[in-house]
Length: 361
Image (cartoon, rainbow, N blue to C red; front, side):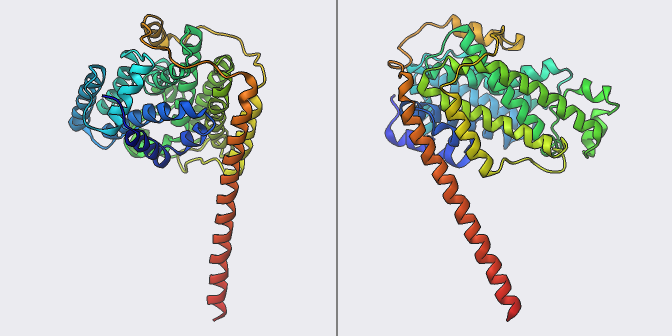
């Protein structure tokens, strides 16, 4: 069953409303890549929400339901849902091996089980499942199937997940979740269960968050050769995602690594700068060394290497001079951000004027 235009539109709307950072970065992808990317992220997003909104046994039941839906997708008989139909088209067209989305669902199962993470390797294993798998699937959408390319895509996905964990320490803890390595907490003199029962910021937590962000930064660096090896027209969008997420970590650092008391947000003006940087980086070589895949991600890399190609992943790669189209898209995005900024300033000024007038009255 082929996805209809309405299915693709539904996926795009879901991402635009629910995954704003990815949607912003996706506008720098070539037009032919956006719809498959939206379908992929829409399936991942709905899967995450389906488990997140449940608890305990209900969460595990939601995971079982997801696995059934995934089996139907791979059998070519998706449920009568726009996202499932669109995702079926994507996995067929780009020969995405079953193990990649199954790894994602396994990560969601760990959430539903309330799993704790003793070591940093345990945290990496979780990141590989919920984010590295998505990075690997995105690489396949771009025609990058080599072990090196998939390894670097996993690095980037895991780096983003570590950034998310570092940003959301307080928010997760208040929901009863703890993704920081428990061994690190005990090394810092913090009992994980006691802290989780009454989460609060303290210098030792800040040091652990800093340590996690340093690991993420190393993975962003490792991802560099993979991005540089993508088709030229695909690079700006992936660089944008890399820079936007890495900046979240830097914002956490600016707040003294306190992600318990508040949640870091990157200002629009800074987003503009990073989009320009993404465009500039797309034509520049990278000097970062190639590395072996993360041990925790090795099985995903092997699964792609052993998967048969049913169809060509993408058409001919655009030469470097087609970056002009991406620059045009980048200018359009920057224009939108500036327009929103002006609207926000005008609204604030109008509100201020109303308050002053009321005071004078």
